[in-house]
Each structure stands twice: as structure tokens, then as C-alpha cells.
Length: 76
Figure 1 (tube, one colour):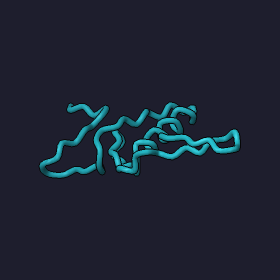
Figure 2: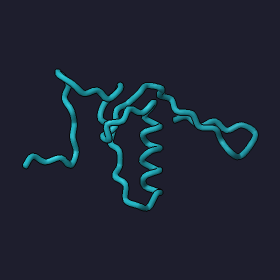
Figure 3: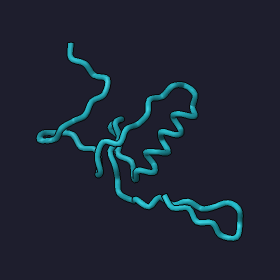
């Protein structure tokens, strides 16, 4: 993330990465910055939402020939 400060005291921040990423919740985020924003939102909600972990660059995909990452799932 790059922040630019002009004449005002408030800066404008822009995500340097515009590449989609896959999170541990199975959602594709437009950038790693949006994934991090989701983590901040979950943390600030105060209801104990789990953190979203970066899994891979590119969209989340499932199906034959792809490994699927599952957190908190146990075989019985």
C-alpha cells in the first residue's frame, strides 16, 4: 500500500496490488489489501470473527486437479 500526502494532513492510500487473491474463507478478493481490510473489519466487529488467511495469488478455484484448503474440518 502506498500513501501520498499532498497539502492536507490526510493522506490518500492506494493498494499497489490489483491482483486477485484467495482467502481461507473460500472467497476471492480483488487484492491483498481488500483481504487485509476484511481482517480489520472482523477484528473490529467485536464478535470474534475468524481471521481470513491468504491462501494463493489468483482466484479461489475448486474442482478436479486442484487442492482445496479446508480449515476447521475434521473427518469423523
